[in-house]
Length: 522
Ligand SMILES: [Zn+2]
Image (cartoon, rainbow, N blue to C red; front, top):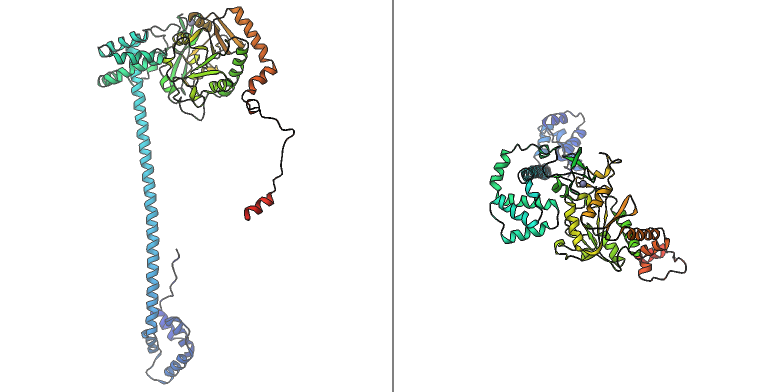
């Protein structure tokens, strides 16, 4: 907004200067200019020249007074006043605008500060929550660890209620606890203990927490001795301490032990798992599983070869256990296979959501010919129970197909990438002996490695060694066969699936830009 300019007011000093102008004509002209803000007109000039020259009482001072007392000067003054008022308004507007801007700024600053405070508060709350849950976790591990050793889910739930609450569980509590636990994941046991503790011991727990040496990090209480009952989770052999390494961005210390018998490398008490799995259901910017697509694609191709080599029966029913986003299930299904998936940590998979079995517990025994568990075994804290459950839902001649990087004690040290320490979810690392011990323990007859002993796919099979060997050899030949490869890939192709006829030659047409522009203009 511009402020209009004002002519200067003729001050006393300037009027005195006017009086001293030597030539009369110049004096009159200049007086008109300065007082009435215009050029003098000829009649006035003549009239006032005459008066100033011939009337003895009409002095230059009087002339100035006459001009200043004239109606015209009054109008000039009024005009000036209007202008002044206009300026005042303009300034006032500018002031208001500035005040408004200032207010906005202050408000934004206030909002920013408020947001900062909310974030700060949220951070403190999260921290408190984490410390609270850590305290419960340490309590579970220190006071109730023996409960975790109880195997039958129903017994576990009953004992837990009896010990923690001094009463047996209600029928519904028993039922809901039991069904959840039958999945055989160790975490679920602790979750249940936590729930019981949190629900009913809220006050006394705080007291217990206050009494314990908290906030001592709980991993300090548990290392590096193998705690009670820490036999190998695969074969129950004794463990020997290997390394203590930071996990989850070195937030916690993990103690790695190796089984003297089956050489499985394992973390006996990964108490940070809840935190490690917290973000599992959300997409994140740096997912550590970058080989996800390649793994699913290769697995699909190898499964197709195995199916053709009759490692599986005709028209096999596939289940992808812990199938995550559902990519493999979608690939199999699109290729005409009967495939489903299930996952404890995914509420709705991105792919094959219509093939998703929400309730793993509800799956009847003897349901599937093939169960795949890709990059799952290294996450298990109680693998035998999980594999036993999978064995039960497999048909009697069914095959369990897994993938995990094989742990070779002579090759792998604490720098092994597959420890995936920043991620904190890998807790069991399988040597070949461990895999075979697990298969034997859960009732399989042979373990096959396909297409190489580097793993990729590891089969727990009901076939005899010789039978499986022959079938896998057939599978390997198929993998090298280009016709088989084409057949496998082409099932996802429009050309093949929809019987599209190829053009005789490529069709390319010129686009007339001028005509197009002309038509638009018209
Ligand atoms: Zn072992």
